[in-house]
Image 1: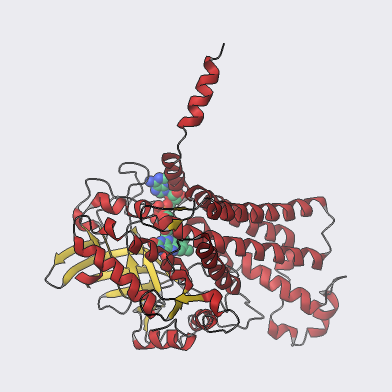
Image 2: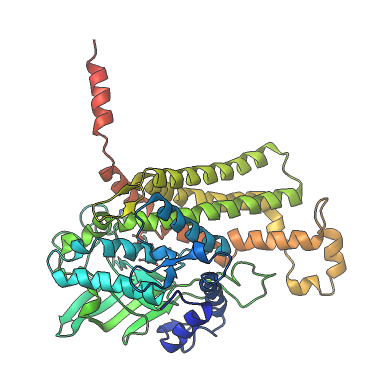
Length: 483
Ligand SMILES: Cc1cc2nc3c(=O)[nH]c(=O)nc-3n(C[C@H](O)[C@H](O)[C@H](O)COP(=O)(O)OP(=O)(O)OC[C@H]3O[C@@H](n4cnc5c(N)ncnc54)[C@H](O)[C@@H]3O)c2cc1C
């Protein structure tokens, strides 16, 4: 089947509805539920872009198996041109969402491409797992499915159990039974962003590894439909309050939702199991398959777009308030420019230094992407803070659309006008700024960027362990020995 349209994506969620719970109730049809439907419509818009004649070649490529046009984020890049094509496709989607939907399907499409290419890694103990991961990648590519994923086990306590990146497994999601048809898993994990998906992937996190003596029942990788019996998504409250685009410019469009994933004795068929029972193989999966590099490529391309959005928005705020000549405002604008240029430079360096890996995939260089991701954990909260500092009380003097047409309309027009903007223009700009840095939607964006890719403390351990410091150390040692 060729790349899906928006209507096909929506029909898929209606035919196989994910098991979604929110506000004490199960949602029967997520596509019409206020609080979900607008985010789903934005996703549908992304799918429709695959059929837009003007950009079709930027969004899709010819499937190596069916010959159909399929989503470009599934491509296995082997040349710089293909890597660039993939980045253009990712950027096109991110520009629609202004980088505010981190989990557009490209995030997991690139990951599964890498895992499938590294099929031999999965087949080391169980040759059938190689076929499983490769068939699954082809299945999601040819059916253009949307995936959510959940990697992190809940913890009763954060007292370290071993190394700083190890988690305890006492309440971990676990295999409770193996049968002729597959495995049965029980437990819970957090979080699953975009539970409004066709399938959920469950695999080991790079930043939360299992202790080496962990029971085998806690180590696995698999995927199942979000409609599977016994699987339940417990959602946080929606930040799309079903208000107008004027009132909530971002929340009314880009709510992707986050959920606790509860597995109540859920059956996983053997053909969808990719790893089982080998703690070491699980702990090293992401690094050895290079999955983290490809997801990093998607994340950093998205981060460039998000920086561009923050810069454009900050600039309009400054122009509206006429504060651009003040030195401290210039300094803050310069900070956003620095963030954008550094993030872009890392993305470019990662592509320029890309190499064919042992699985035959052109793999972007890991360190520029790891550094860009690490920096963004600090950059994004700081950029949100800069919007606070630039906007101040204008972020609170915010009439709603109803106010703009209500009894105080004349007062609003008179008092909220600035030298460079009408009251209407000012209110639109600052409602957007408020939804970016003050609203529940905006606060969640900050939390997301701080944590979704693992917390900074664990990530620095990974970075320190990976980076070869010996050549520099030897060089300085030699200097110390010079007469
Ligand atoms: C908005 C959002 C969306 C997310 N979406 C997804 C998703 O789609 N899929 C998914 O799998 N995960 C997702 N996550 C989860 C994310 O991977 C975790 O939040 C992240 O890895 C941190 O783990 P934690 O939340 O368990 O925090 P904790 O580990 O509980 O950390 C809490 C605090 O304690 C510190 N800390 C705890 N233990 C240690 C330790 N051993 N060493 C050093 N410091 C420690 C942390 O630095 C942090 O400051 C999402 C998170 C957020 C906030």
